[in-house]
Image (cartoon, rainbow, N blue to C red; front, side, top):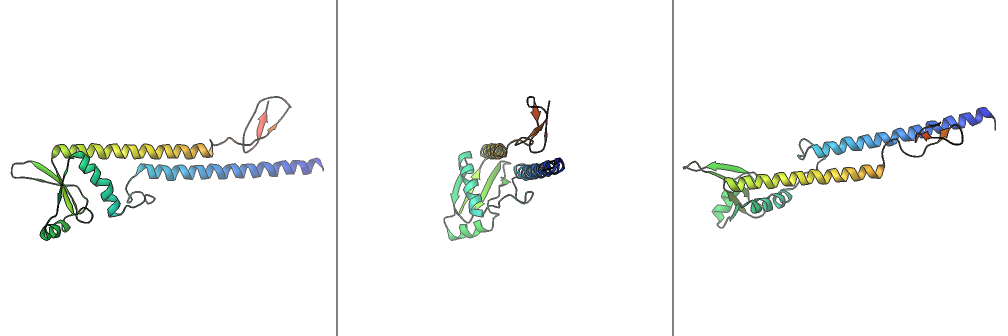
Length: 181
């Protein structure tokens, strides 16, 4: 094998490794961008990659928080109450002020529990705190998942490499070419 052919083989190997390294870095960057977008937004409108929840999933998420916050569950007992309940916006937190100026909060669930949740200002504040704690916990869970994915991929720039130079020395590089001193 001539010196020229050996040199061409090394150059081709370096180019293949560089392309492979570039592909890994590009895939890593795409994962980071998608992951950051998913973590930054919890709503499906702002985040097209977020899964949309069914009304039943929303109810299963919201109702335990309302109960833990101290909201009372008022079931629709009569047919008239059930009919009126269906005219209210489902699973949306609303409020009204009574004639004494006291604010009352409510959430209607005409589909699953067929009830109205009712709470006062203190219940509302507890609900908002629980909701915030759940959002922080979900964000932290996603961050841990991202970190685990990054660890599986390994840090960029590390990987198989080779060095040029003398037999002993320090070499750096990876995926591309390295230098020895």
